[in-house]
Amino acid sequence: MLDILIQNGVVTDGTGKQAFRADVAITAGRIAVVARDIQQEAKRTIEAQGLHVAPGFIDPHTHSDLTLLVDPRAESKIRQGVTTEVIGNCGFSPAPLLGAAMEEVRDETKRLGLNVTWTSMTEYLEHLRQPGTAVNVVPLVGHNIVRGAVLGFDDVQPTPEQQADMERLVADALEQGARGLSSGLFYPPGFYAWTEEVIELARVAARYGGIYASHIRNETNRLLEAVAEAIEIGKRAETQVEISHVKLEGYRNWEGVDRLLAMLEDADSQGVRVGCDQYPYTAGASWLAYILPYWAQAGGTKAVAERLRDPEVRARLTKDWEENRAEWEDRGGMRDWTDLLITDCAPRPKVQGKNIADIAADEGKDPLEAVFDLIVVSEGQVECVCFGQLEENVRALMRHPLVVVGSDGDALAPHGVLAQGKPHPRSYGTFPRVLGRYVREERVLSLEEAVKKMTSVTAERFGLTDRGVIREGAWADLVLFDAQTVADKATYTDPHQYPVGISEVIVNGVVVVDQGQHTGALPGQLL
Image (cartoon, rainbow, N blue to C red; front, side, top):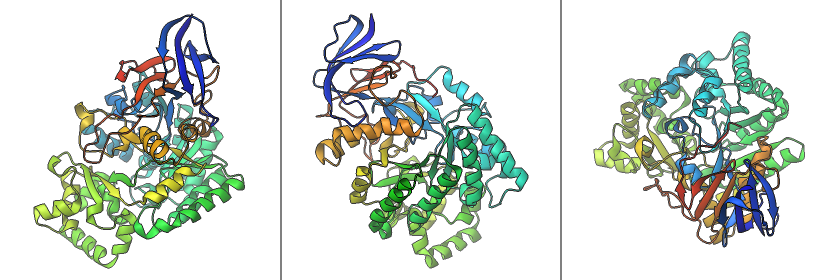
């Protein structure tokens, strides 16, 4: 007897070929049969008339490392149809935790009500195994955390012995379950690293068959240089490269999309395995301190906040802003202070959902002083959204075959500690937004193209065997959705809203979302 029989659905199998009507049978966590009319008995039959049946969506770029420990139900992701999350991105992973890296992660966990009781990747992953997760999890080891563990968060270069220590930590994490290395060369301490340091660490990942995923050094005025560096790292380390949340940030740089795509195509034609992921929005999100010059970001988040208590440092930064405004705008991607929206500042919740210009006006102070004050009062933990991209470029990148869909978001929930602040809506809306807005309404992609970008292409890049496709023998990670109604609901001012049009989500053959409601099941695996 079958475990589950899905009848009369329109199968979009993840390969990009035209959708077709078929039944899908599931046994022992895997797809047993895909056929036009399956007559076998099943413990449960799901009527999918009028629905599309697709492989569960694979999110290649997430920051759910800690939120999955708070709520393993992964509410905001599973309800999008996401059945697999790649964590440990942008150079920040939950392990290995030593020295300054431990302190940095511990500060982040405080606001979530978590206690750090692990140091190694093995120990962290055991915390995910018990009690389990609703989604499958693919961990990466972060360069920034590794560097912080060995060198701290200051502007220093490693000795040969320290480089060897970093390579050992990367190797240990890969042996313990990580599937690759991520870097955040836009953030401290990653931006202090020379390219050769990263190449050697990527070579370690390559020896284990791992991927190299990178938040590149610059996404504004030096974007092409940063992309070239990522390509060089992948070429010399002989590993797959994933350029994270690809974009052209900052209004001065919007005309470079053709040059960017030509560079990616040229690398691909020369045999460099390069790909990108993208979220379908014109705004990004980060810590507010990212707009500061690199010297002001040294030492970790608490050190940044403490530094800004000093009037002399503020005066130096104000002078730098006045003399080098273009550099600040390029670093931040902003046109003016209305482009920076505060999303999370626990000590001052009233500023959440307001932009810096309005906050400064309300408080009768200069916008730059308002920025400094927010960083200080939050001990560096204040987060923001920046509206710095062009909608036409979002569409152009989305169409390209080397670009897949990724959220750059967290697994959140509209209740409890995970409902804090007004986070970027991508945590709730990325995948249904592509299906609703960019497939159904704007026809930027066909439905088959979009599903392929959400499933099989990502699975192949990350070496996920038997995932991301609907075929006999593949794991039964599936999502059922109504192509006529699927849509995101989350907004920048009201982000904690689930999407609509997704009725069932199945992970490893277990129903996790049933008629739009979470069942509480936690069948996810560590991949």
